[in-house]
Image (spheres, rainbow, N blue to C red):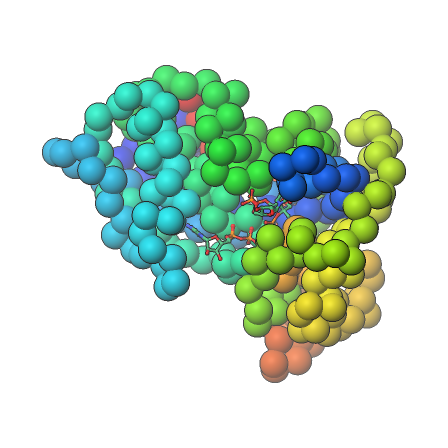
Length: 283
Ligand SMILES: C[C@@](CO)(OP(=O)(O)O)[C@H](O)COP(=O)(O)OP(=O)(O)OC[C@H]1O[C@@H](n2ccc(N)nc2=O)[C@H](O)[C@@H]1O
Ligand SMILES: Nc1ncnc2c1ncn2[C@@H]1O[C@H](COP(=O)(O)OP(=O)(O)O)[C@@H](O)[C@H]1O
């Protein structure tokens, strides 16, 4: 289906979760060296691209608190135009369904889908590898969404070894806080010395999330949501939070847990996906 996408199509930008996330060290530029496994979810923002007669990039759906020029879709479109010299324009509309500052990578995924879509629609012809390089200038989380397959990631999250996690059902809780990623990474109490493992040594259920301790202290709602989830098994925070998840063997079991959610908590049931919905798009 990916190759039938055109100017009239909705372009999906799925969420991700980090099945584990270890912080190994810090680079001189302040970015952290990580090991993590990314799994996509079947929850997604939907992006629309409209062609224009001029070469302007316009955003039809500005997000609360985010100036259009700062929106990751606009930044991605401009970065692609600058890298290719393409003079075509686009109006971008985002049907925002993923929580912002939730650790589900929504903004990064929007940026990746914009790069994939406009590269295709404008006929730029850049390779996925080149799009990943451009994506990395926008955010450490952008390249995985262009890579398109679940992967064990290293470096700052941009060096990939493909892995095959089970496509379990998940209950994802969305605490009522937006966590700025930089707040977690800059905390002096963050442990940055977890030993590396070989990608081949990873197995489902391995490790934990080194960012969780800091996020739980700064945002007690994250701790409260994790505590509630633990009654169903192992509960983890995704990325730098605030969202937390637990896995279930069946959709029915995940729905049963969702039905028991206290009134002051929000969540959704979703399925893990090893393949990004645009993984088969010809670039
Ligand atoms: C933590 C992760 C795990 O997947 O996910 P999220 O919680 O954002 O979804 C990512 O590494 C986040 O990637 P992303 O959200 O693209 O981060 P960026 O915009 O590049 O960086 C935001 C800030 O986080 C810090 N940062 C980010 C990534 C990294 N490997 N080391 C860092 O120290 C830097 O201070 C940077 O200024
Ligand atoms: N298209 C976008 N969608 C979401 N957030 C965006 C977007 N463009 C810019 N941002 C900014 O990026 C921040 C974090 O984005 P997001 O990727 O959703 O975080 P996280 O990966 O932690 O969920 C938001 O709080 C917002 O300020």
